[in-house]
Image 1: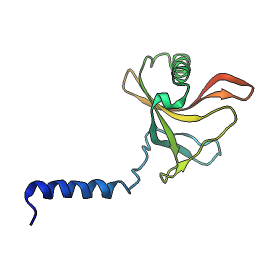
Image 2 (image 1 turned 30 degrees about the horizontal axis):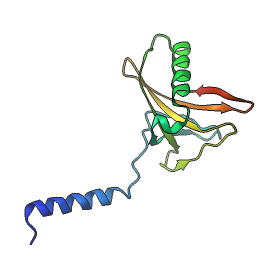
Image 3 (image 1 turned 180 degrees about the horizontal axis):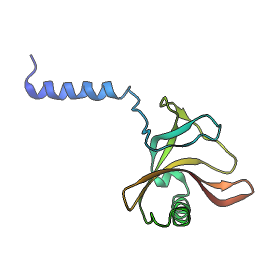
Image 4 (image 1 turned 30 degrees about the vertical axis):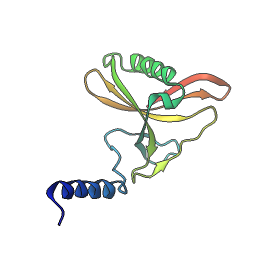
Length: 133
């Protein structure tokens, strides 16, 4: 028979191992329109800002967009980048010419959160970045 500490450690390991196979549901409170025209896309796997390869450019573009479109809601308290998932939690690969596309979850100073589709590198303007609600 295992003593209490080993049982707790073993039980915790089983719980962790068991959870690793379950895909957590996407956050349905924050979504962006699917460019394919079928419903919404939601935050998937978190991506570190540095992994976007244009972190500072994306943050600056998001800041400009919020200041222009929602001036009463600025400033921005935080931004988290994510891959995309559909309503069933399946990963959706967003492809386009010019660069990668991410779902940015933007937290505003008042605590509200919005989802934005963001990316840098647009066709013939590789330095340009975009934000779409």
